[in-house]
Length: 115
Length: 112
Image 1 (cartoon, rainbow over the protein chains, first blue to last red):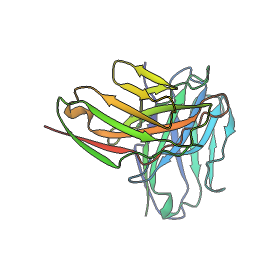
Image 2: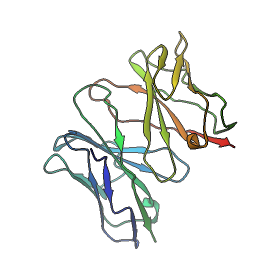
Image 3: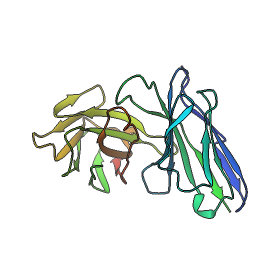
């Protein structure tokens, strides 16, 4: 079946604006993750959902970042008052969520550029 | 979380076997070792995971010595398409500890 999809693939915005990044996980996967990857670095964990609830949001850098998953499938990462330092690739991953250590399947990411 | 150390970059010729070693001196009893591969403009992709000794799948082998303070990812007969960044991750995969902690990875370049 289809893999994890993310939209848009690229987003350019101005400092101070609000942005939403969307993730469509693999159908049936109950676990969903958001990561952020800066140039030359490995992905950095932001938040993890099990079903509709955020099981671990310890990676969100500050209160400008928020994520939802209202129906337990699609998730939206929301960034308020964007700053230039928010520029990065935002990756979404999903896993079946049925067992410990389930493999995480990553999407292609959304490249966010804040001017 | 156990910290990992791996080479920043490696070069190899097509057809050779490539071994990438990762050090994780403070690995904990419940920690597993997982390797991911990432191509440009793509998300990471799971390659292999192990706890001890040797694990082999259709893509790679993972060698873990008895003290588990290091691990080696072995890619047999590499091709140009194996050029990518390879990440070694060490972490507790029990319930409630699903987040992955990536380092900076090893940039592998395959030379024709």
